[in-house]
Image (cartoon, rainbow, N blue to C red; front, top):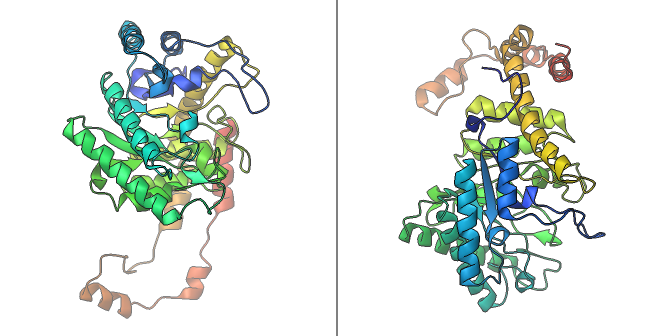
Length: 389
């Protein structure tokens, strides 16, 4: 049923990170422009705008140097806010990029003590996430990279990262946490080059893990777009492989720094095909908005930013339903997929099928002349997006 008001509902499964709503607008050329919010205040804002859940890095919630009593107080207050506002924590993650100790990476760092500390810190973050019943654990290796390959053999980095993942999955199993792990790729920034720069890189790594069934990917719009790639294609590959465990929604202009714009605000056509894909295949996971409001925003405008992310998704979801129901569009789709009578369908190899394939006489000239009205199809798509169809 169409949501004519484009207002979020729990079944939409929209989530935000503490770090997104709580972003204070600092950038490399300027200091913070918004006052710091507590985790409780962020939960209150998310409840006000109608979000389903909130996600966090360990140090978004508990400062890295907090005492045990300070930690317990923060956790208690956060839990009370979640319960009071009926906000869930579906995903947790760990910061292995902010503190100076990780300046040379975490799991791939050359110093064995840093690698061991990264494991200790991540296990503690997993413990923290389970205190709030998180089901997904995301890993983004923001410092797992180089400015010069003189510092380490990249094959050693791959091995170190694999060893860390195997350790963390085994820890989850030993604790009966039932976590699924989602790996998030990015080509560069904050490092000059980051190992595993694309979703496809992680899909290849996952196949080498001890418990590959528990590890998938968390593609992000901005990160794949930074690499100049088609994000929907990356998501589709992950989905087809059964590895689309989580997804980060935002927007990005190609060739720029990591912008994390409001979802659909830079490339609405790309966002349309992404939403259409997720809805068509029945993706049932969280729709997580890893985006930031403009540095010019105050917190009232931040609320509009959050509402805008969810509203745009719902608008595009309705547009996708309209696209799927459009008789002319579907007629073109059927036409371009039609095959002639008796054409052997591509199937699993068998001697019988190969004999059919060899016996059929293809007319390549006729095939080359078949009408493929993609210009018309694309313009009909634009008409729907522009609201004139």
